[in-house]
Image (cartoon, rainbow, N blue to C red; front, side):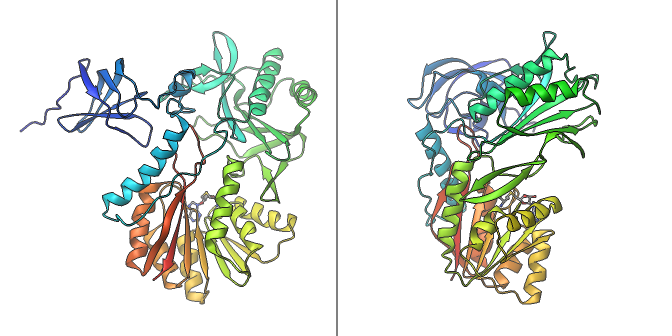
Length: 456
Ligand code: SAH
């Protein structure tokens, strides 16, 4: 029998939104067939037009609201949802925090772990203007060099000056640099023909240090008038300590290329996290929400329950920010990370802070854990902060074989968290209540949390 979807393209339907997806889309159901609708919220009754039908789901667009959610925020510009820079801005902040808490809770319920409690999400007092880094595409719009953000699921540039979730000083700097590039007739990148000079402006600003770095990511090796451009940036933006050109001649979605030139100033800027100093280069990974990162690390340290005598493993350590914060409370910290450049930065950062009880290793965490286990390392605490795909099963096997008292799991993806927690439970660990969500990305659907697993 041929399957028929219960909806047809271009038809309109009256529906009630039941749920919100991880991407922040409302979900309506017709005969249990899900239809995803942007800019709709749970409880809203809408008239919806179906825009696309796939085998097991469809997409729709709101044509009219019959009723609106009491949690809807209406005073913000629609461009934030259109571009996907702040896809949850139409949901009031307290409701965003609840949404994140419930999302984790539901995933535990789904696998019948009803006893796992998830606490309310730790939010921000000011849930905007938080990002310390921006990567802004530069294109031609109506014949003029323009900065903005891509429309969702496209590469059309929507001109924008206020990015809402970025440090406002970064927003101002982007406009200044844009105007300087206009003045010197720098050619914006044309994606179709792969022509033009400047592809992206990246700006980083230290939350505490106020040191600013400007990176001009270019297709061309040379920026015409680069001396004049650099001089004007320096003059107009006194916080700038570093101006860098990164050449990325490839026709690719990867942002940065390998070739880097310092146009002026230093190769790095500095900022502090929990009082420790970090050198940040153009291509370093550095947490983008410094206020919430401090809360996250403090919580991880507290939950680890360190007394100063412990051996700690920090897996997926990046540039060593968690390792260095924990080192002050532990005997020795071992960090492992797959990107060698990040490990080099971690070693520099240890020196910078005069911390000697840390050892950093480049490698796959799952392989290094296996090695450590065979070498007889006995960590009291293992901290993990993996990317979205979570932990490899071999990682969990090696980690639990080392019988640490605690595993502190920092997660940016609740689905893989729940999957991994189940494996830890099969290997003699239980969840120390509750799981704590911490909002690292207000106005977006990203869910970050800390879970502690304790040996039975
Ligand atoms: N804990 C750090 C970084 C967390 S981001 C911080 O708070 O800043 C996750 C890190 O895991 C990234 O740096 C990524 O390069 C690294 N990574 C990804 N896969 C890995 C693997 N298989 N083994 C080790 N590190 C990995």
